[in-house]
Length: 385
Image 1 (tube, rainbow, N blue to C red):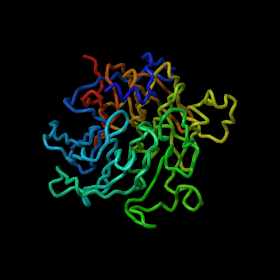
Image 2 (cartoon, rainbow, N blue to C red; image 1 turned 120 degrees about the vertical axis):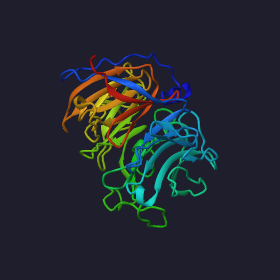
Image 3 (spheres, rainbow, N blue to C red; image 1 turned 30 degrees about the horizontal axis):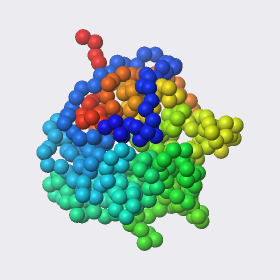
Image 4 (cartoon, rainbow, N blue to C red; image 1 turned 180 degrees about the vertical axis):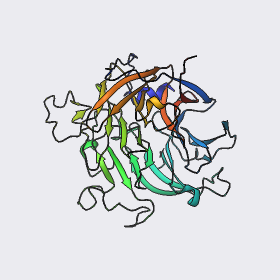
């Protein structure tokens, strides 16, 4: 468990401090966590299939996907690919998403690392059978593989945007300080947000490049890239109302940052770290070419940002439109509000003793957090007695 945190933090053990955030607005509603299920093994993601079944699918790092149905964890896994997944530290089965038309086509996609023929990220497709509760692991279609020079900063999240395209968050390839310069290298898929069309095939690939990808027709640039200059966008999500793409990008030694990812933008790594010119590179860098984060905080206040969701549920009206995120290092859940120009409110919601590895969202827009030590908990309002 601790290895995951240490590697995300570049192997350094930091003193855990609770962020002291500036409050711009009134007091948000008080929240608490209610346990939904435990006895999981290193859960890293929770998603729904958009099939009106109410089921939740939980990703375990070793390579297993479990089903939570009517509040009960089914004994038989939905998918077990431990035979091909390399797991440990920041490697493993890291992401899962269901096709927007899953109920009709049964397609879903995973992001995992394997060490067969060298460490690499694999984006692949599976198809669910009629039972919708168990998948044969042999029916894998590999869409994309990306070589990983080091074992950390693998990104791992995948999600469909409101445009029906598949987005893939890739870290810079690992080690520290981006030694290969991948964040600013448009010829590699590392250090970028990728965007592909899984409903078409072209150019001998198992997918197509969307016609509006910013670098589709430029030579010597990987056409899959949607945006770049990222260090390790561990978790990102789309606002269910506006379609905005929110990402928490894990920092190096100085800043943790939250970005709105937009087409063709450069988010600065490794010239920038959050809103500052990266110390040790050029403290007086020109910031003008880069898209600055909408919000960042110093690593004295938290060490591993965990991107979450804009709350669009109904159970906690006072959180409507608020972006919730957490920090793995101190277990604090925080919120902010953004008006497309500036952050208008930012404050902590709840201090926990949890090792929060990810957020999840159900079909009603209610939010959950995953405790890396083996539990899923729902975020609910702490109502006065």
